[in-house]
Image (cartoon, rainbow, N blue to C red; front, side):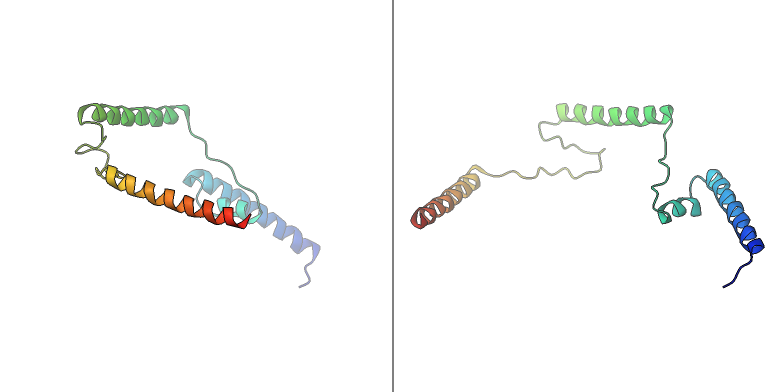
Length: 124
């Protein structure tokens, strides 16, 4: 494909116009569009989104309020931390094991380690 110098200059000019229009569109729309994709295509990471101090303060206040709610529930409803309403997470206590089950597992592990020590001792 043979292009004259004039055609190449025109193509470069069009590419510059397209890039500037994409940047304007991205600033209006909020980063969507080809401007974000072109950064990844060229291998660059693109610009990081920044957050205003007011927005960060709102997020921090909301997080503190969530933690305060969690702590207040923990004090009221016993030690499980699970109460009715709120968090949207399951209220089950998980990972609890009876003393008998804990002893059974302990005995099984002791037997395994004894067998391992015995087999290692025989190889030396």
